[in-house]
Image 1: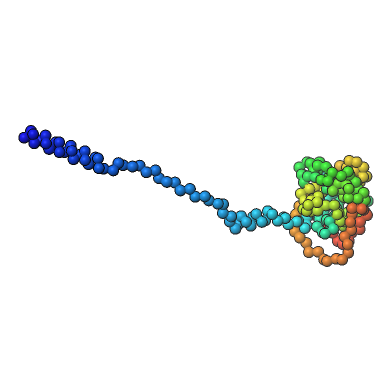
Image 2: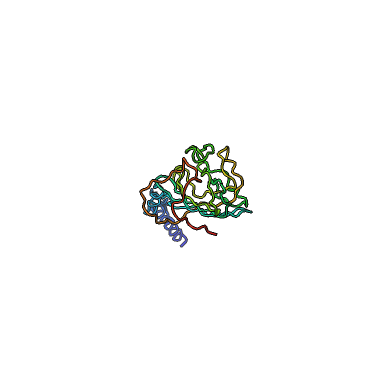
Length: 242
């Protein structure tokens, strides 16, 4: 009996060895990673935005400045700007001035009205770095040098002029966002800024809605060679806003 059990145990061991010898060893396969090269996709909106950046921004055709009195003064008015092929046409209406008074008017570099005396608007707008001069000195002057305006017997200024050395929002000396300043004294043309005294009214040049203007064949008057005070009004000006 014991011999039979021994034989069975040996047979079992033999079978186990055969099974282990013929079995395939287990393998651990490493998963393959597939790399896909992706390219940026240009959407229609992206292409439109890119084209918009590449094209020039539309120029502003109309602008307006509401002149408000500085502390202790009363002068107020409206200055309108219209972009033309010859430059910028300027329409000025100012009230509450002394009869016959002569006052310098300039564009200053900053549209900052935070100071009560107007000095926060900085100095004359002069991006081309020219010396100061009156309009009759030609184009080699500050872009903001508008010269002088003269009040009538009622203390009003009404005039139309055109300046060829500025633009509203174009490439050359754009004035949008700058300040218009009316001074207490006339500009005598001296350096550095004309000895025009304190600032009695000030306003910021902003975008205005386009106006319908009648066609005309008359050439625009170029104020690059004239004083503003010598220009006559060509029509009823807009009423100042209080």
